[in-house]
Amino acid sequence: MKPTLLEGFEATVDQVIFAPDLPASPEQPYPFVYYITIHNRSEQTLTVKGRKWVVRGEDGKTSAMEGDGVVGCFPRLEPGEHFSYNSYHTTAGRALAEGGYLGLTEEGVVVIARIPPFELIPPED
Image 1 (cartoon, rainbow, N blue to C red):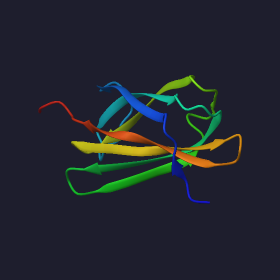
Image 2: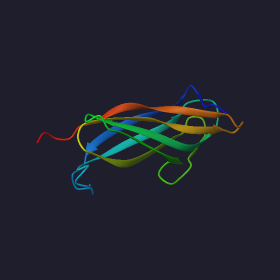
Image 3: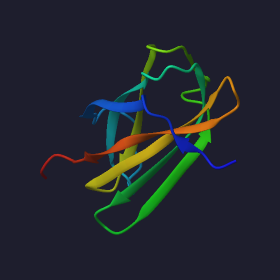
């Protein structure tokens, strides 16, 4: 079944912070913490089942990450509820991140919420 957009099932990027004290590889030396809130402003109860992120670097490289749940759990959101979390990603330089969350309503309808694009900008050298 193809996922559809559900009005009111939304994600907001609350904050993005350069975090130089977090682990990073020499190939991707710039770590960023991002804070996200998933909102259920619809009239349906749903469970967040998965996510997919795409990060496009200014160097032309694109990486995609996807998986089950969100930070190890499957938030069940009643109408009006939200789920907030943070995670981090490392980059080789400036990059643009975006993606979506996959949800399932109690009626078995597969829905998506888009993650608005946001920039990961390392400090000036």
